[in-house]
Amino acid sequence: MINLYNTHISSLSIHRVGNKSRNESLFLSADPYKMDDEITPLLKEFFLKPFRDKEENYFQFSHDTDLEFHELFNLVTEIFEAPEQVHELSKKITRHLFDQSTHPHIKSGEVYVAYLENLQIDNEKVDAVGIFKSELKQDFLQFSEKENQLDAILQQGINLNRLDKGALIFNHKKEDGYKILSVDSNRYDARYWLESFLGVDAFHDENFQTKKYLKFCQDFARDVVFPAEDKKEEVMFMNRAVNHFAKNDLFEETAFMNEVIDNPDLIPEFRHYKSEKAPKYSIEDLTTFPIANTAVTAARKKIKNTINLDTNIQIKMDFINPESAEKFVEKGWDEEKQMYYYLVYFNKEHKS
Image (cartoon, rainbow, N blue to C red; front, side, top):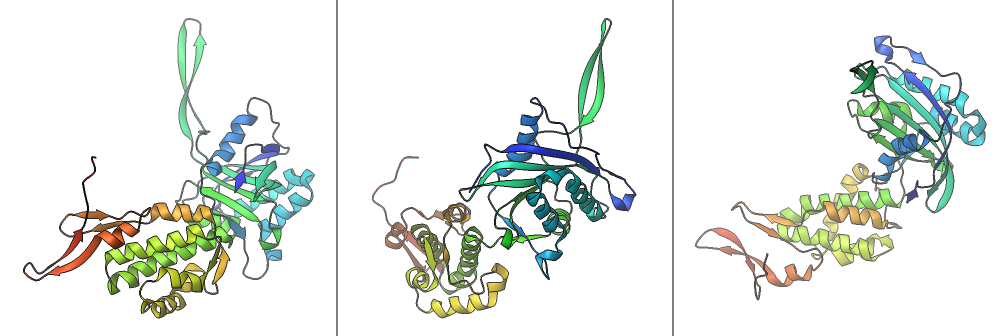
């Protein structure tokens, strides 16, 4: 969890990058931006609001060989070790971004490099480096009075309600490549910001592990449970899986299989499916890990609990009271109509 409420911008540098493939220039400011009481709170909200509203999917710097060869990791480390050098190092960060701006779709824009203090992550107070980019300009009108006439002047500027790109690099978990949050509102080239510039991969913490394992379970339910049994059992399998995660602090795979997989014949199918598909979800060697409650809550919202029938009828299963589906919903086959049916028992109908 993060808390950005008390964040203080101790230094801000503003530069501009163009697109190298279009021979656009790079502009580096000679000095840090001079903050004032009027613009500072507006910029703080501009920079941080997208991260407060965003699900906390963390990244970390990664390199095929070693982090010591990762350019941005080294620059950020220098800043954390000597914050007074942040402006000069912000120029190198901006030049690094400029060097990646070669795709014809990449837009020119302003780059903001901020040294941030008093952030909280994982209940620890830390500093952070914020790197932000504004790209899209919007038209707005300015007005001027000339004697007895009011004139409208068309100008262009940045919308402070919309940050185009940004990264918060927390001085936390350095040995793993730091914990990083990223936003990218303009996905015209998804590789440009995350891969080419930041050079990051997903941070393999309990949030990542919980989310990936539940996604693996969801695909197993769709690909194996549904064909072997029916849609009701697919829904109920995921209901049991999510409830198992919700009531435990530590995931243990054997206990999970024994509790969640009703049909013993599906246990070897589960192991086989995992051995085949694990690399896709990055869970190859994952058999025990701490469970992240926030990831479980997010997964529950995304899992569909509805049986859609080809007769334009839907049956919605209740995840809060799963025993209802077990007791009061039966599936059968009607010989006369040559159709499947669901039989639903109830005492009375509730008013809408």
